[in-house]
Length: 258
Image (cartoon, rainbow, N blue to C red):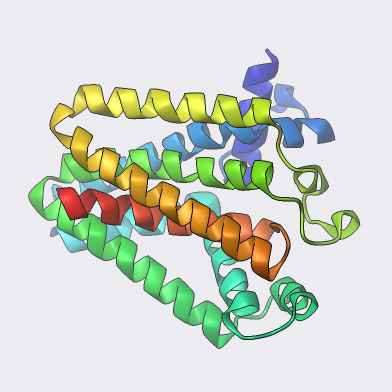
């Protein structure tokens, strides 16, 4: 029963989707629910992928892609996109660690945040549009895959790096304590199961998926090194940015082969 509660805790944390009242909430569940970020990503990807496929039956692929992305933002409340914008604002300029952390706490959107958000969203839209032109169903499946796999990167980051901000003032204090190797192992298990499922459904996409995974891993290593050098660790905002960069890396890796 606890794994199901942890899944719903992750769902409540990462999305706007309702959860059953019987689930309840315990603060320690938030620290233990990180492996279920991948299944939550799969659910978000399946819903947005369904919007993409259904919309493609009525309108051109570019419209279907934009509607799917809008559905994704609605479902998640722009949770990861907000972290991306704050991270770009904080780390875009040549400022000190303390100044960068202060900027990321500011809710106002700056020029670096606006530029980063526009460029990342444009890259995702262009990549999905390219896939949807060839096959809306394949684009929907790959959207499900990238949404799930990209959410493994923040868990890896929480395992590899310490929390950079003040844990007492963290928006989600349990996540400031990081993630253990057990949580990371379960996360990777979910990710591998997702890859196996997609490879079974679309065996011809296996080489492209492998390239996407390699690209995503490279981006994850780059983020870990960058954040360690600039901040000495991660923050909630940088976890969101890592997910967004990982999603783009997966899509670009797919297209580089496909």
